[in-house]
Structure formats: C-alpha cells, structure tokens
Length: 449
Image 1 (tube, rainbow, N blue to C red):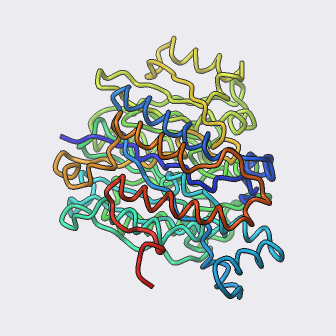
Image 2 (image 1 turned 180 degrees about the vertical axis):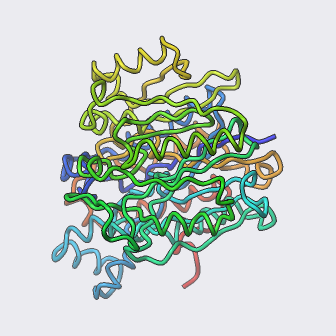
C-alpha cells in the first residue's frame, strides 16, 4: 500500500514582493508592492486543510530562515548581523531582497523525487534542486537538504543526493519540470523530464527573451542518480516560444497526476514526438492508456494560461476515486478559463470536479497551487518512518494558524527589510516551529557556532 503526499511549503515570515525572478511575469508585475505574510501563510494553510478534508494526504514543509546573510558576507559585507543588514540596505537593496526571499515556499522547486516503486534499489530518492539561475533561489539547497534529511531520515528507505553542481550547464529547477505517471500509488510508473535547453547541443532552439532554467543534462543526471530505468523515462524539450511568454517552468504549461495528463497544445517543442513517446512508454509499462487532455490555443491562449495559472493547478484523487482540479481563484475569475474548466468537468474528460482557492499572495509572487507542493509517494512503511509532526491534521492546522497569528506581520514593504526586528521575529518564530513539527534543529542559528 502507498499514498501520494503533497508536502506544502509553509510561507515564511519574510514573504515580500522583491521582483527578483526575471522571466516570471507575476513576480515582475508586483515588484515593490506591500505583501501580507500573515495572510499568505494562512491562505496556504487553508489550502492544506481543504485538501486534507478531501482525503488527500498532506505534509508540512517548513520555511527557510531569512535573511540568509551568508550570501551578503560571501560578497564582502562584514560585521554583526545588524551591521551587515544596515550596510546591504544602504548599498545594495536588491541583494537585501534576495537575502530575505521567501521563495522556498514554492516546494515544487525544492527537489526532484523518485518513489521506491521505480528506483532500482527500491528506496525513495531525493535530489535538492540547485536553482542556480536566480541568486535568491540559489541559496536554498543547503537548507532544503537539511529539511529533507530531517523528515526522511531513515537511510534504509530514503536516499539523499547532493544538489547538482551550480553551473548553467546543469541548471536544475526540481519537480516543477518533472512529472511521474502511474495508475496508482505503489505501482510502476513513467517519468517525464522537461528541459528548456541542452548545454551539449548549443545549436538547438532556445528562448530569445527569458532564460531556460532547466537543462537536458541536469534531467539526465537526476535520472541516473535516482536509478530510474531508461525505458521508464521520457526527456522532452519545452517550447522556447512559451518560455518567452512567461512559462518559466513546465508546471506553468502542463500538469499530470496518476494516468491523467493536462497540457497545452504548445507546451513542447516537438509535440508529436513527446506525446507519442510518453503514451507508448506508459502503456508498455502499465498496460493501460494514458488519459490525455490537450488544451488548444484557441480555447486558452498561452498568455491567458500564464495570467490565470490554469496549468499550475493540482490534480488530486479523492479516496472515492474522483479526480479533482485544485485551481487558483484567477481561473474562476477568467470567463474564458472558467468556461473551459466547466466543459472538462461536464464532459468526458477524466476530471470530475473543480475547487477554486484564494492563494493570491503566492500568485502575486509568481506561484500557484502546484508551486506550493512537493509530491512524495510513500508506502505504509515509509510513511511510518517520517516524523508524525509534519503530517497534516485538523489539530496541526489549528496549531500552525495560531503560530502564524502570533509571529507574522500583516504587511511588508521593501523598506521594511532593513528592520533588524524582522530578522529577530523570524528567528523566534522558526525556532518554535521546529519544536511544533518535531524535526530537530535544522536552522544554522539553532546550532552552536
């Protein structure tokens, strides 16, 4: 027996709109606006609670501590934390925004995961993404690795790999560019790795405006590290044109779950070859056809898909077998997208219901419902090996909501990042959080110098 958990990233106390992610349209559009960290965290918790109530297993992935002043110190700033904070605020406010980034809440980028049903050594494999393309995200891998090891600590069942070397040739953005298809948890599946460019094939098509963050070489390395048989893998290139339209990760243009694949007509550079290979391998491995829903550009143009994050919805299966689409409110507010979703639910598509969620605080930073979760398939024995404190429950929801109300600010503007009080508030909050979740000391400030 196995279940697929959604480990949702708990939004951190320093959630703000720094506009740090070139190529992410929403991030750039909302740069400098006032954020509401308290509301952001509560919106995320409400989504966790609602999916838990639908019968979908949920886990909590704690935020990273911010500011990450080691970044500033590596760039020549010296002195106490307060002194470094003040100097960076005066001289390089964009660097300060990067040090304070709460982007770790988008755990779809935290790592790539392979379940034990597919790995040759029958362990669950984790590789933290190096996220080398953006400075504010490149500081995440060490803490992500500690969190993963703190939650999935049994080495007999869980294999942890180092992030790939931090170089453009091995750019890795985690599960946002990886989708696994299988009839049900615990059964063998097929893995789709999507890349934006190949370092070894510089002549291949590339986007002209925005960067391609995932490389073919990185995806291939993850496959080897996770010991996934080659005949269970499809490597596909993302359409460079959609990257230039704001599709910075594959999960902004397609989403898959079990045997259902919802994707845009223009998602892939070679659509026919990608769909053909994926369908053939899935049917050969599972003995069943892949249920595919292709969204034509005439129904939902790429710009509309990016603005509403239709494909950054989650697909989940309820205990009764019903497949639900977990979509952002922006999809409901777009008549075009709402009408299309309704046609899926009312028609023959393998989607039975839709639930719309307000995660606007996350959306304004460029992350929808699917960005907020890392999927981890666990057998009963593997589930028993993780700390009970990270498994979502109604009691944990109440505890974490009260914790957020105690510690989070209602508003943060860029100038507030210079306040050393925010740093100390965050430290107090996260020190308490590790005790609530029972995961031990994962933050540097909790360890002896």
